[in-house]
Image (cartoon, rainbow over all chains, first blue to last red; front, side, top):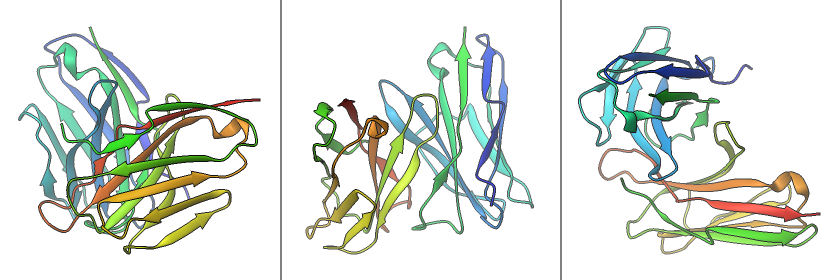
Length: 113
Length: 112
């Protein structure tokens, strides 16, 4: 069974631009969570989607948004990029939302110049 | 952001030695997960724990769900060079928003 895939793997943007990242969960998994990982803050939860609905949201500004499609694929968008948005963005999938174990993708490394 | 206390922060060990690390929280959790992350990659799930007191093994790895539900431990026996990486714990509770909170990570370096 294929794992979680994320595209693109690497991205360079400039301040003020926007970016869209994509995540395809493991086949049959319906829940997708997004995390931001930085050396200073570690792994921080962004949001979780299940059945095309956002179930939970972390403490990030409204510039960070996401959505999930009927095939469970998910995208996250960051508008008006700031230098501090440079990070590894990780997607994790699980069968259902809540207590199920999560399986991570390889991440998208975003560099904002 | 919120993080769990994980110790030690980093450790150098000799190949063949056993390794122990732990994770503590001020909150009660009902799920504990342990992950390993290699540079530039996403975390890989090692062990999942669902019940207080539970002891679960995965090869040379053994993890325990603390009976207070506020801590968890990971042991690696007979370490080998490929054990190098960063180990993260993650906890989740049914109160609040079900999101997982991650530990600060333990960086393991194995000397051959």
